[in-house]
Length: 416
Image (cartoon, rainbow, N blue to C red):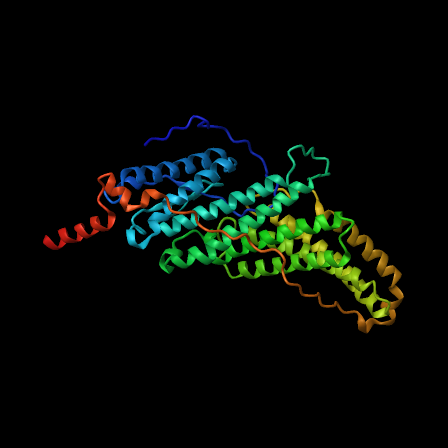
């Protein structure tokens, strides 16, 4: 079986540009060609090896040549490759550690890892599917007709599609953490890329849910039907997601390429989320009739204003961390809050200034309410194994079943 490619040019020149980031995908890792034929020859049918090799090489070539932008083609190839790859992870086949799979970071082209583990390969493939899905959500949230005027319009349908993609990406990553990493021995984990640490994967999954919640908050702000209580709940949920993401990543080794940038992104979004939560909690408290309600509300507004200032600093640090990126123009919920929070904080502190002077002892920041989180990762399951792994089909083709082949090999060793 052979594969040829004529769609993508070789030796292309890449334009230097600083990418804009709305939905953050920490890294894209892509496969590097490896010799599957040598490792698997004689153990499984030639057509299975050819299919594995062809699909993997196709993924590597298309990803490298397009910078990962051919999302639909890559997703299709990845899903097809998974159906064949699953066979290598089956214990009864005894092939889990025969092939040394190589992967590299797409941005700098540096070969990161070379690991002899089919489970590592499966983890890397599902991780790549998650990163492609996050990139697709990012593309949807950046209009192609953006003119640089500082105004951005993204349709409601695009925002909802982006939320669906974020939940899908979160599902891929949750599957990696719960169902794949547990199958990889500790000694192999030590040799893997730091981008695949449990805490890093979990943080990306949770922050995807957070970004989905931020989009939902923006839609609620635009809706006349959404109540103040709904907006406060979404803002508080947003804060909880980023608090959880921070807890996950804080215990990880962040010395790798995207580690520090990833941490700055979570800090930036955490501060924005906390500002939003205090702002909406303040609006709810301000509805009360008691002087203590107004004092607590003003404390919330002033805290939100300070947090917003800190979030701008964190945003700059995120953008400057390697690799350098651009922050998008303010959009959605944060565009609204950057306008409203300073205005309301100033107006309310002037309005209730006399209360603040009289009741200085009551000037403490109230606790934020706790809510059950609404968004959950989509459920993900591996596709069905390719029928080519059915040993009955091998016998029809004159191929010795793998189990018998391995037994024969053992007999030969004993005879010798």
